[in-house]
Length: 209
Length: 209
DNA sequence: ACCACTTTGTTAAATAATTATCAATATATA
DNA sequence: TATATATTGATAATTATTTAACAAAGTGGT
Image 1 (tube, rainbow over the protein chains, first blue to last red):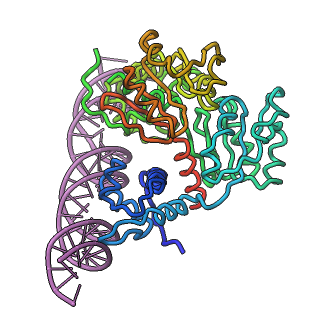
Image 2: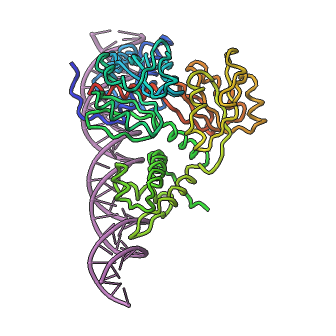
Image 3: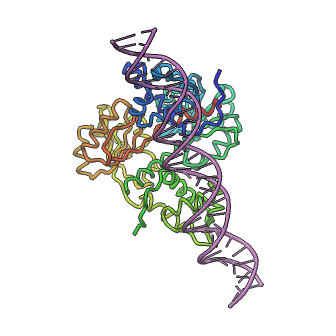
């Protein structure tokens, strides 16, 4: 079904969600077709880059016509795996964990929040959006029982590696990590980091240039 | 004081916070000196890259010895502008805005939260960590009065560009943007984006490879 | 003070990413 | 149906980034 995809660079992969987003915007405006030239103008990319990127995955365009917006969006959605569902837990139910639990973009990408975990007895038992916060000691059983695919780490730096170890032990293969720490996990476990303070420091840097 | 820094690439700049973080870890462990070789081993970079990166800003090392951990950390902190203070406001006081307000890494990078703004009457008037949520119509005056340097946008996609326009109008030159939208601002305004859903989509992609 | 070893800063080489080019092919119009 | 125009996909050229190599300079032990 898919063409073989030999070593596509992360540079390309990280642009895919942006394409997906802009194609959604175009759809909302009722635009049904777009050329790489016009698409590039809107996104701030060169037309060449867009054609090059899309061609990593297949010839979605048509000469003399351009790209069909709806079709291309669906294709990219499938490439990104947005057509699947991922049973997800949040570990660390503090402010950030709760904000993520309430985050709507989350469900839109196919991630379904099934449970939350913490070590703080004050938090255990309460619910966020009908999702219960449980004791972290119940986590391993829950992951197996509820067929959890993804875990989101929202703990402080100190607890993060320990949580990661527990998750790996419980069979989790994908982690979205908000803790400011590079997690040590086996090669077959995927970690996608969101380093908020690093982003903030870059802002500080740019302000002083 | 600073040496002239001719066009340092964003690739280098985005690594600086990581150096800073690892140097902090080393300090906590009581390590006072480190070679590029060992530092590279710990961080997962080549020794060459570390020497190349650091040399963009100055010769911080010593032949036969390596780098002084404390000194190097301070130098990088200064390069990043962490020695300065930035008066900051949050616009959009929903779940994410409140989580960011409670985020500790924030103050550590020199960002001082002075106020929060929203359009929701239910939120206006309440306080998060002793910081009041105010009506967004009061924002422009507040920015001038309190000498605000930085604004954090935590609104939904729909309100983001309008908020950005108001911020630019009020003289703000640096924006940390969490809304899933590319903001249109004048060239002299810095925008650093945190695209959570894009990060999540990359995770989904990687899970399907 | 000497010598073997370490390690930097810098330059060169290699690799990766982006942009330009263009033949091939489709569209749109008369 | 013929023709001018638009646009892709692919390849080549260019630019950016990373890695390797090495002389110069310092360390540390004797």
